[in-house]
Length: 198
Image 1 (tube, one colour):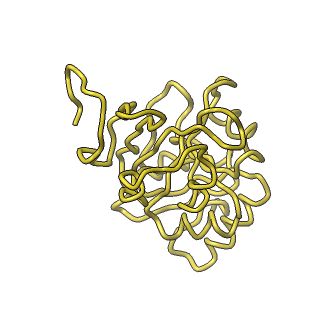
Image 2 (cartoon, helix red, strand yellow):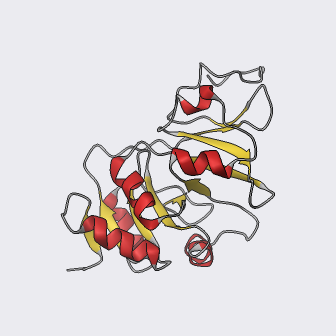
Image 3 (cartoon, one colour):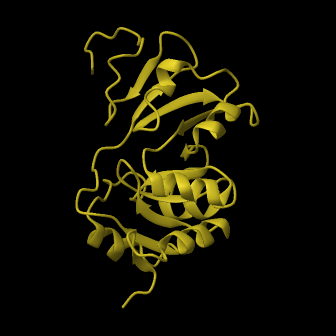
């Protein structure tokens, strides 16, 4: 039996996940959207790029609490966005600390939010695949392909989602839709496009 494969419902899973992430290791776990490869921001960046085979310049989404998001963004995050959080909405903001644009999200998953608070830092999140290949959603396929590349593979329930988050650039108004996903964004002020996606 592979001892780095655990169940999210297991009583020891929280401590094991937090320990691995705090040490800069990667964990594959259920997020509120799809299974993701997650790791502590900054410490796991090189490891995550190696697993993904991703180019140095392409950034990863960061999962964080609402409090972290508010302090992270250069500009105040509008109430129209905040009311959709926690949820499957990723927004692009200018970082107050890094002087660059970053994609951030407040996940609608109590376990994940508790882990972020315990680790004390945002988490990188990326789909479970090698860059350029289709994302994997079936846990058995994920474990077979990636269990030897990460510290832990955490199995969720059978209702785990298969649709990624919606991504919206909120650095100017109206906002720009970057990727259609799981979040309904019909309430947002978006740029009008010829072939609307919403």
